[in-house]
Image 1 (tube, rainbow, N blue to C red):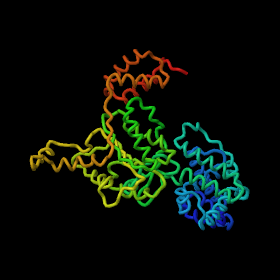
Image 2 (cartoon, rainbow, N blue to C red):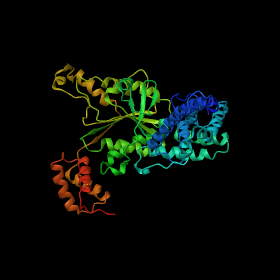
Image 3 (spheres, one colour):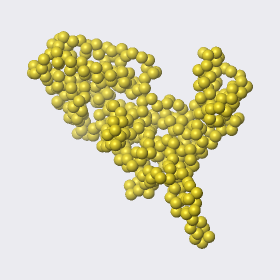
Image 4 (cartoon, rainbow, N blue to C red):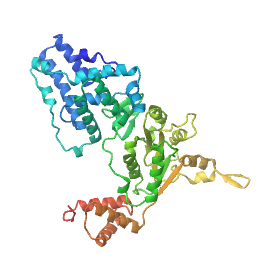
Length: 453
């Protein structure tokens, strides 16, 4: 195996601690008789366990070796795969090197482990060729990744030669992209400071000092699931549609009362436009100083990115908003066209305003002007679209409760639903869409609630 892998060029920068490279070293030591067989067996089993862990994480089935090799192919970012993501497979000299690498991967797909198994007295690789995962596919956090990897793996299994291998892989790059961005909808980031504290997630993809960590359990909510707020949803969808279609679009601030669906709307937008190349990166306030580095890593990718900031607000002593202002508009470098910033906030003006701000008054030609207030309001003005999500009226609240209950299969009468919903909101945070959902969840958890089957 080590002789085969040594011929890789474009894909030859695999991590030395990867399963494939570890197996190569085991094969080399076995051939040279450099180590006791019992120790070699232990080393093999460690790599087999890693394959099983990967299979569990991503819900891989059937031939785990093929699934693993496919996963390597579609997550390896190199000049060839990045180019295919942007413009597809074009004629060029690089194709010669790519086909050479695909010839190697074809050999790895067809690799016969029987010699290793017979020499070491094991049969684990045979077992991995027809693996049956435990658990229901719908419960997997990585279902989206699992389905893509396994579908491509099955096609590659039947590839006649490197030419067909080339076609299958480059078609995948063109349709879905390469790396974690091609496989996932949403990400969080871990910065160098976070990594020092040990908060970077396993399996995350490192780019410079920024680590992009896939969010594998993102809510599958769609805009139609959010009852009411039709004007707000349309305004958000129209702006996002223009963005993914390459037309001019604005940064968006969703503000208003808590529990009204601001964050849910952002998630729904990502789900709605994911297949058109939209991706989301969630960033927290303490990471704003790394915004420029994040943008530098994604500005040349063939995706449209929403940088998402949830529950955005600043106290008067916090200065992180200055990093955000510079990135949105006003810095030396222009914000790339494939990046927008969407934020939610319970405050209309984001930065807390104090009475002392209003005392900082200058009078000029009869006009009153506060430098402090202007400084704080200037951040909001950098969002081209502001959308208000206000608390629903009681009538709207009852409509939300009824809609959610009927969608969940609850067949209580509308009169009883509204009566019980009114009791619930009085002791559970007041009227809001979130309160309505919590009330319906409460009903679903009660014994004796009649549901449609």
